[in-house]
Figure 1 (cartoon, rainbow, N blue to C red):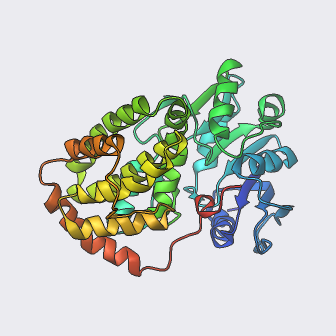
Figure 2 (spheres, one colour):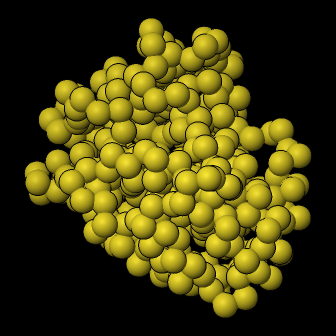
Figure 3 (tube, rainbow, N blue to C red):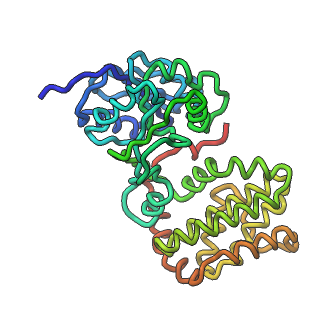
Length: 366
């Protein structure tokens, strides 16, 4: 049966993750419709992207230097020519009928963009299960989203022309900006309950921490510049709830939460102008963990994340750091030692792997 070719531009993006982008283009052969245009934005990759032979032949827009996801999306969507635009990240995979089921909603004049839940599907193992629980988007939700995640948008070209973030200066958080713009214009950010998309990028635990804090930390960091106490306390309260939820799902998830917690707290102290406190914090937090091997792993992981992680220090930690250490210990669940023990074989297996996918969050800040 011949597939219908739609007035649709498919736009995706690559930054040193060409294998994912090429696999996305290859996966389009399984869709039940054909696009009239495919655009790949190569966002300043070290090696230029070479598109596989697919129908239609992709047009590659290469940016001279890495601009970040927001500018890459603006370049790609701005270059698209068809009535409908499908913007999706290189690690998104769609079921065959996704476009044909979502397109009628995107055609409605009161709808700004359409998306569906995005299920993180990074393979097997403890880390993949944690990422699926923590980073899947809008699972079980249907309706208008406050923020439609930037990984997957279907919209009319007229919406982009009138309301797109053409002059948005940031590298990130374009989904927040665009969703707010559409809301102010009275246009829906419609999340349909199905069919769900999958996000297949395999992230290491270090990349996962950077990614999570990039998105969650913005508001906490802004407050920390004038007063670190309030955001630290608010963050500890939020993490207490998060740890409790994750502990119910799988106690071994505790290590990932501790790593994220330590990285975030050190970032808050650095932003507030307390670099010495941030440098001593990893050692204090590690000393408070009731499992020495997990504590050593935590310090090593924080070093890989760019923190000194001194376990011992001749200088006594500041009262602020000691107070934060007590706060962290107070939110650890009962049975924390056994929970961390159960995580150790998984962490050791992760450290032997070499097949993690590159992510924007692994790149130096620019």
